[in-house]
Length: 321
Image (cartoon, rainbow, N blue to C red; front, side, top):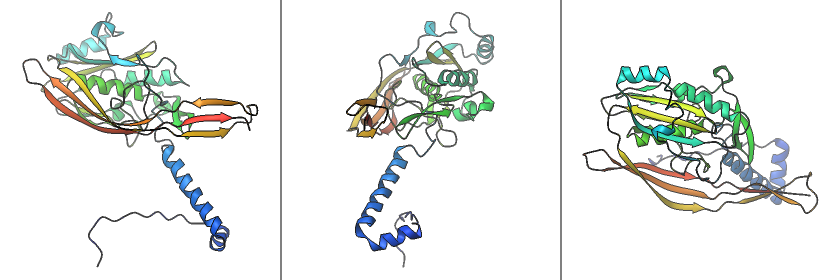
């Protein structure tokens, strides 16, 4: 009688006839094939399984002044508010800034700047109605040329490669932080697979069409208006409401660190004995994140945001053969 416990999934990889005969004939060949299969599976898993992380941009260590709260007079539209924003504020009563965040991208790759600007334009003017869940992918995507997106940076197999819509995760990361500052409930949010340079671990928000989304919900009884814009080397996302915003304090605890591996690969363009670091390794980290939210006149409330695990970024060195 079959057991009642959980079943394990077994993946069977077929071998060509010629390789199967060698498999039966020679023990050392069997060992070599096993090693090759394991390494291939590891490379497949490590590379993000193809284009699954195409919107995330380039991973790396957190850089100074790449992100942070934005004050009202710092918003690029502060002096001359767009007419659409003014009309939305008048219609909803959402005239108070309740949360704003800025993410900087000083060295964009490919056409990342255009992707960020396009995503910000799609997001600007969105109204979060009480009790309804907002899917960011539904507003920003699909990330196709027909919607104005271009090839931006993504990371796959130890290399930077162009990917349609690459870079828009900077917009979702800015929105995520602004939403938490405003006391908005986060229904769904995903970290990147590796640390990113523009937000601390635990405070980023990855997007991937079809399976990684950022979803938000307003639990208050009044709507929130979202406005966003790319300006110079930054993207700004602001939330407007009709209530006194809370005081939000972030708490992050590092639970584990994983050393980065070193990968060496030959480069025939280098002289014999010459070496060049092409990717600076970054250690992996596991982080538990929470916030303390305190509204005026109410006791502070601690909210657990979850535990995120980031893989290490390999240290890649090329050498002359």
